[in-house]
Image (tube, rainbow, N blue to C red; front, side):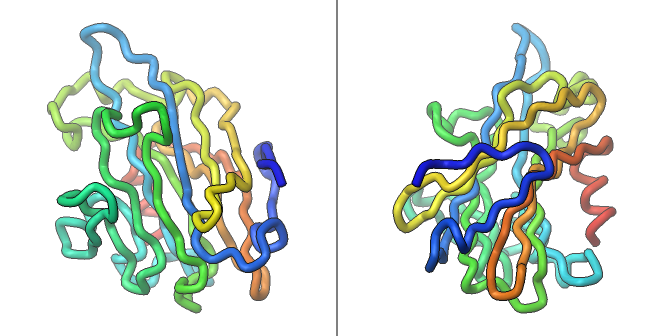
Length: 217
């Protein structure tokens, strides 16, 4: 079975496409339009695991690089000495922070892994997001990052891979031109009975990561 290309708003049954599916890899990539001498782009992948009230049940269900400092982490299997954020149910292993894109080497810029069999019963949706890190949170404390938005980033995509086989199940390429927004909810995994489905969202916001935190906490 080949990969399915989704459009904004499309839904896809992961369970039907890959019966017995357990662990999925969520890969995301992008191509920032960096100018010589301009501010560096630092895009970050995060996830919000929310319940029926559309809020995370505890802090660990906000999967982002900052969880490592809080002790919610696991060492990467291949890159020893590098750690990934981890939810308290052990289901979501988040992305390794890659501020300058040096780790991707032509592959996904950042990725995370979700064991669907371990997701807590109190979690109904997992919303996967990408945000632009801006001053004063950027590494170089460059005020010019305040002017960055997704209109300056090309070829943004999210894809889901069956980790057991390495087969790409679906891909969603972000087509909209967001000329003011710096945070995008790329897609969500959600329960339908005992099954899991994915929806390509493409919903953008201003206010970077803090806007999403305010929505789901």
